[in-house]
Image (tube, rainbow, N blue to C red; front, side):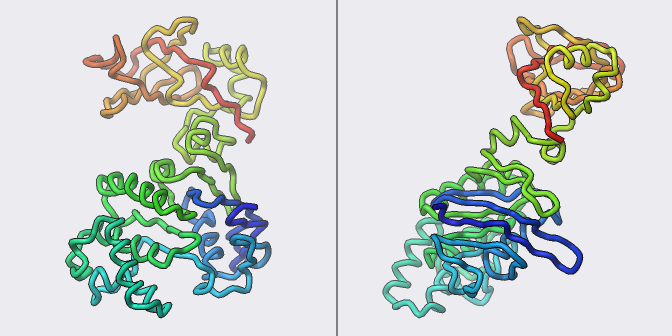
Length: 346
């Protein structure tokens, strides 16, 4: 049996369906990320697990226990939110110990546990600092230490890095995952940022309109999105409806007809194209719309027939793109690898 099992959970606010029959299971120690746009139901689902909202239907089991009638403070669940909700008048150590003191744990145990948590998040030397004397990243560490201090069975995280700048967020992401894995806590993590989801999660559940569209490993979600919504949400814009390529006569359409059966839509991932000659692949002429160097990759936006396509090219490959430029209107060959194409379900 899964450690956290959510079964056909439902929640509406008036006529608005926020969570529409979602089922989701987490194994002990697993990190699952709920990923999706604003209003898709991911935070509402998190609040249902926490007991901050009551479900209209369905079941939530934690280690076999039905949580429906269990109040929030008795669920054994920790929570960490974007605002952190730290107490500014307390020191770092006092904030971390707050949950333990509310549970009336013995003073020696509290002292030991606080020291353990501060060491875990590398904040030992700052235990006597007030919250307003800390940076955003340090406050995030304190909030994490406080949420883990009570040894929750499940930790819920709602956009915990959302208030940090991009560079700090990227730096703390690996640290956060390492800490969660070291502690072994089961975690349900909410974000709208795909890079954050991919960096933190063992599995990602992409949500839309109160439902889970797809759940799988980050790699599988990106390489094989199940439908047009998931592909578009991940920024994979090269989606071609079957009617368009079956009726057209350009080289791309001929390639699609030769390689794929007639599906609803076909995704051509941005990494499926290359400028350099590829053995065994036939080049297709495209018209450059724009070309820009982006550091880790070069972005080519081009047109072939009626289709606008984007490709992330490797400027560092042997005989690659370093020093080369392409002007709008220029016709160049692109080598497409059909093995990377994905047929979408809808």
